[in-house]
Structures are given as structure tokens and as C-alpha cells.
Amino acid sequence: MRKLAILITLTSAMALTGTASAAMYKWVDEEGNIHYSQTPPAGKETETIAPPPRVTAPAGQQQKAEEEGESPAAAQPQSDKSETLDEHQAEINRKNCETATKNLAIYQNSKRIRTPEGKVMRLSEEMRQQKIEETQKAIDKYCK
Image (cartoon, rainbow, N blue to C red; front, side, top):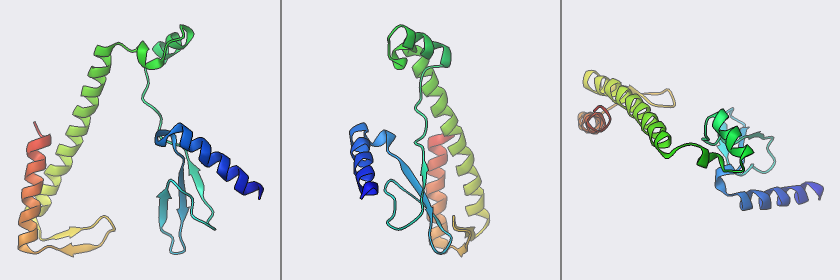
């Protein structure tokens, strides 16, 4: 009964704080597969995983803002925020470009691919050409 009361209290607290700070649970099923969820499975031992850290101002600016009673976001000048976001997006685009370029080489040179589960799969010529077209679009988008 006490566990139920704690669960209800935690669930209510999570609902009030929103999904950005919702707890994540990790557990292993009978076959050894790892699962992640925002709700713990019934009857399974779970590990609670903290949400990813929020992006905030650099430590010096954040401390100064807190001392002055400002929010950390207000401490970082607008131009710095956009530069940081632009740099972050540029890094994401670079990684996507690199991945798409590698995938294109794979699709052009082989009809066999390895799935995310590790299985080798043979693509039909039609499927391979479709993957080449999709990958070329990704290259056009990310490799500027």
C-alpha cells in the first residue's frame, strides 16, 4: 500500500513538472533485451534513468544570473544563443552528412546490408535504388 502511495505521489509530481523532466526506466526482459520507457513495467526490476541535462548558460554566467535573481536563460546574450544553436546544428549536419556519405557508398557497392539488429539482409535492386535516391537526398540536404 505504501509503494502505491509513493507511486501515485511521484506520478502526480511528474505530471506537474511536464514531460521534459519525466523519469525514464530501463529494464531487461526474459530474453536479455534492454528496454527503455517512461512507465515502469509491472513486476519487473527497473533502473531509473535521469533525464538529459538542460542546456543552460555557461557556468560563470549562470552563477552571476542566479546571484542577480535572473533566470539562467536571460544571462546569455541573444547573439551567443543563436551562435551556439548554429554551431550545434552545423555539427549535427556534419555528422548526418558523414553518415549519409558512408551509406551511399554501401548501397552503391553492395546489395547486402546489415540491419541495426546485426542481421545481414539482401536488398532487391528496386529497394537498393530507392535507398540510393533517399541517401542522395540526405546528402544534398546535409552536405552543404
